Length: 239
Image 1 (cartoon, helix red, strand yellow):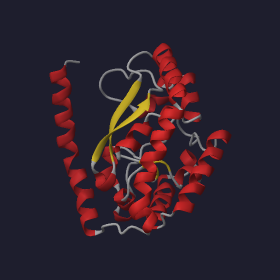
Image 2 (cartoon, helix red, strand yellow):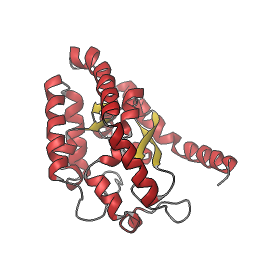
Image 3 (cartoon, one colour):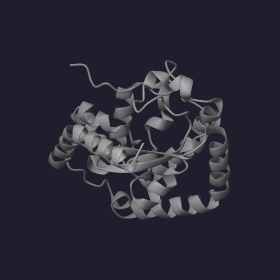
Image 4 (cartoon, helix red, strand yellow):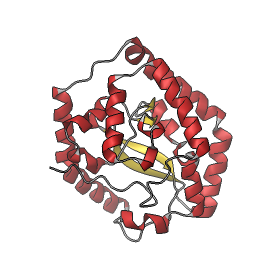
């Protein structure tokens, strides 16, 4: 695909999603988030940046080996990038290691995820190694160590007012939903955990979530929802 074609495609996609982005921006304008305490207001962001920088340095050998394995087993590109909504629904470029074979054509069909997800890619996901490049997002300020996971852009217009509150804080590498079922719980349960976190951000709470995440990764809990290779798409709420 030529550079001009890619730019044109991006412009069309951005235009199509403008309504959803505007909707969630309006929601935040009328329901602004007040930091829970000193930790959230003054400490969390610089601490996240420091921890992510240290982790990037300490884990650089693992990042290099993983990148080489992805290149050998899945080909190029090594990194998977995608626009995701962050704080206040503003888009940022999310970085992850590729875990799937390329889709046929330009349209990605979630029903083909199982066929495109290789055993190697499944292992990367089960160990969360595919998410290590998100350390770059944390350093840049797109993400936090702990917070609601960054989901797809098209979900913005599908949230109800309660669910939209998950965007009142930066998305995280891990969060309450990830240590309370991960992909094995429903979307509604995930969003409830996300909003609960938004309303109760503390240092001890974040520390506990990080420790629980380590346990979840080691025991490989909640990797699959039992219906598909990845989490089924969120289609909105029933009226």
